[in-house]
Image (cartoon, rainbow, N blue to C red; front, side, top):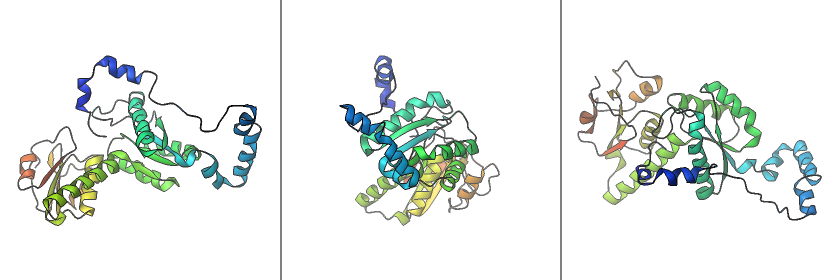
Length: 276
């Protein structure tokens, strides 16, 4: 997700590295291979019949292969946890962990794919070529604003579900938590003003889902302060967001944004102080 789990500091390096040795994933065989007949069914010559059937009707791959339940967990290692741009190899333990979560809590098989490119079009081309091998894409730890462009292009290019976990996974949890809190407190979404610190992937997605959910006003903060329409240092994503947020016209930093706010959502390691 977006922050390093501080409880890990209570563990020793010996425990942590031992748990990761050899990686955290493996494959399991679902077809019995106990005797020659079973081997002949699972592999040659029996498998040829299945392959011929799929060649004649490609839709059968969803029934007779694991692709329909296989998620590709994809990263370029540019925005990992609280670690930042550490590259694909260093990001692989995190992607393995996400695949383990898919299996443990969702019952879905997944495979981590870390790519040694940060070029959006190259990543899209790679996944298009690999499309027959998986049934969905979970983008993970890809830096903003490239992550927005990448997701949009993949949705257009692929005929399967595409999700960016840092955006949508975070946003869904935040919306659910706020719904629970407002129910307990008997508050109306329309009366809330929410401050979101961090205008990266998770911050932008959270702002969007909160506004779509009916929150009255959202104020965004980046490292230079409140995101507003008079700033000339905004990227296209922030500029578009500035036109839909900060209805009160606030200026300044964290202190100014928090005056009268009902909720603070921290999604950045640095919130800055003195926007113009």
